[in-house]
Image (tube, rainbow, N blue to C red; front, side, top):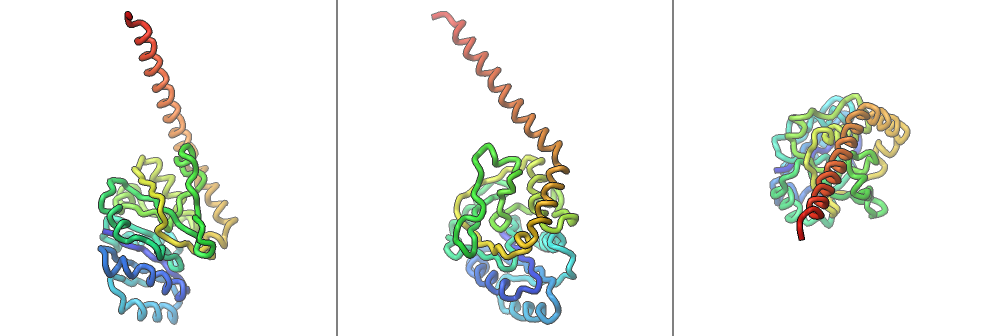
Amino acid sequence: MLSIITITKNDLSGLIKNIKSTKILREEFDVNQIVVDSSETIISDEISKLLSDEKNIKYYWQEPKGISSAFNFGIAVSNAGWLWFLNGGDCVNMDLDCELFTKFLNNSSADAIIFETKDMKSGGILEKKPPMWGLWPPLLSWIPHPSAIVRKKLFENYGNFNTDYKIAMDYEIWLRFFSKNVNVDLVSFVVASFNREGVAYQSNKKTRSEVAGIVRKYFWTIIKKEFWSLRIILKSLIINSRFVNYKKDMPN
């Protein structure tokens, strides 16, 4: 049903927290975990040994090629219908109702489900959802990748993560999916805890640079979508105005 794809590099302690947090899902529910490791040999040997006794974990070592490449490797080796990108250092929420969570996955007809993530240190919600008018396109970059669970078929149909991006690859892929009119469920309960000490927060300037480039790349797609929304508004006004005039012209 679900593959948790976890990428890690030279962070044994973070990975240990991660796999402890996924234990119940792996052992009691139809969930497996794929660990894509790019650590140095001394650390990768420890990781491989550590994971050998864990249930429903597949370990792979990949030469360091960047986050996007590691994600894409995990996608390629997974045979699950749903994919969850939960990196080393990030954790499944300790209070997660695993039975309810898996029921959502089993019963949803959506292409993706966006849950919520809390900050590992403060315990607060990491990215609060914007008002409804600001949800799509996701220009405010509000989608928290540790709690966005996506059907594998989206990658098969519309392509994998773009390896040109080193940090903001998840932002790019959401704009790409948005341009294809995917169906998304928004569910307001926390499924993951996020480590703010990760590379995205340490490289804020680089992230902003990539995001700006991605917006430029999809500029006309975004404009096209906005015009489509305007067309729907005008169509609604015309239809309802005709109905009002029709009611007025009817004999009493």
